[in-house]
Length: 180
Image 1: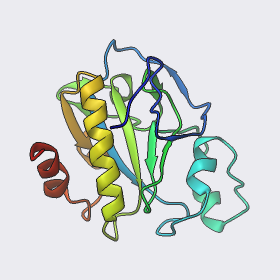
Image 2: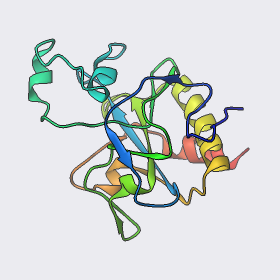
Image 3: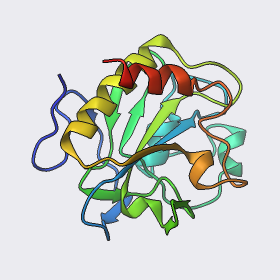
Image 4: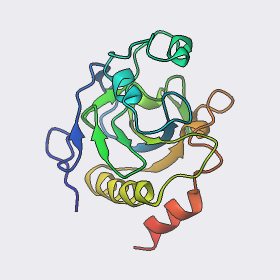
């Protein structure tokens, strides 16, 4: 089983440090937020996401990159299509993944959430390897922190965000968690 150390780092994730984080305002992590991302959109396997999260994206490397608003973003975790797991920010820090958001009447979800990005888009299904890693990561996070809920980015920022999108199989994901 995966383990998270006292500093909020997962032992089995490749660690790529993002400068895009700050201190949490909340005492505990209570929410997992599931996202999808691919850069360029619907293209997988490149290093665009890692470069975006580490502020090293060359905006001239692809025409789409010039359309991305200036700003600094990150996430705690990123799961590639082949199941490779990366961590950019300690779970004890606030990664900048949710933006303007609200969950059960509480604003600023970044204060109390862990963000999990899946390499993907709103236009195609996620891989079996991603669900396997997401399941194990979720179990580990739930055994480490007082998680009270799991939501999609679309649930906490409706009308502004659509991810993880229509191809994310919530029944498979949540059913797998309750079945073990």
